[in-house]
Length: 143
Image 1 (cartoon, rainbow, N blue to C red):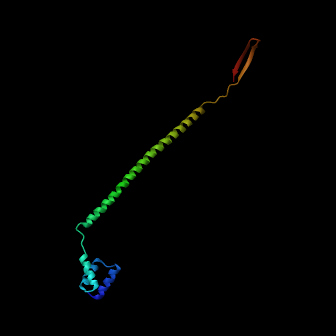
Image 2: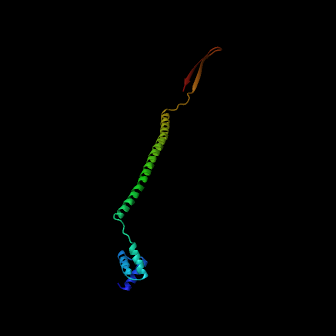
Image 3: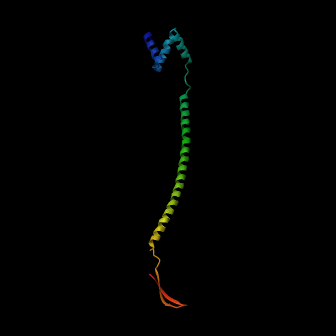
C-alpha cells in the first residue's frame, strides 16, 4: 500500500470516519511498518477480542426483560386509578340522586298544594231572632 493512502486512512481514522474494513486494513499495513504507529497497531491487534458466541442474543434478552418489567407497574397503577374513579363516581352519583329526590319531593308537594282551591275564611253573619234578658236566639249563615 502506498504511503499516501496510509496517510489518508490515518487522517480518516483520527477524524473518526473510517469503516471497520478500513481500520483493519490500516492496522495490517501499520503493523508491517517499524514506526511508532506500527507498534501501536500491533498492540491494538494483540488486544482485540471477539465477543463470545450468543453475546448479542443475551444482551437483547436482558433488554427485553427490563422493558417487560417496566410495563407491569404501570398496569397496576392504571388499575388502581380506574378503581378509585369508579368508586368516586358511585359516591357522587348517589349523593346527587339524594338531592334530586328531595327536590322532586318538594316539587310534588307544591303541585299537590296547588290542586286545592284556597278558600277564604267564611264570613259569618249572625241574625238575632229573639232577645230577652236571659235568652238570645239567633241564626248564622256562612258565605
